Length: 180
Image 1 (cartoon, rainbow, N blue to C red):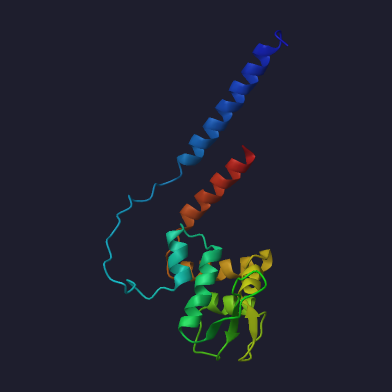
Image 2: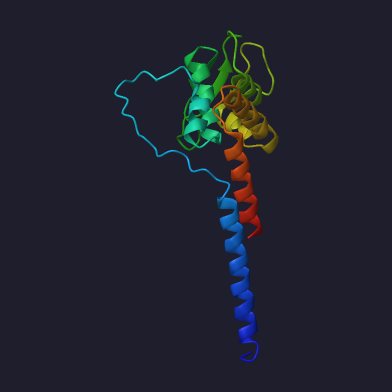
């Protein structure tokens, strides 16, 4: 073991150097975002009409999350398209909630349509209902999540909130991280 130690140390040093060169090479194509300027917003009124999912994805560096899907459902409830009802206490004292489609509603954005379709499994009839916990678990299924995420990202792209260069750089760093 002592005779081969220099060989192993040299191999480890070489691997480290190759990894560092790869990371520095990837970093050369990345433009850092401007420094964050936290603006104080003293009002309870949102600064613009962006939906909760779009605003949340922007805050999360362009990555929609499960919280944004749930915020979409609460936004739809606020507009009266669905209702969220609290049911009687369950066996362990927890109160379950139920989502129920109230009306067809006006025009919906693509991510809102996707959220409704996923939560209610495509049922468009008023009165269709599902437990909130079931709706949440439906969002976590890969096929459903990809559909919602795609809808939010397409809205972000349509509003020109996404930078293709930064997305490509993110993908390169992710691939390099996985390889390393």
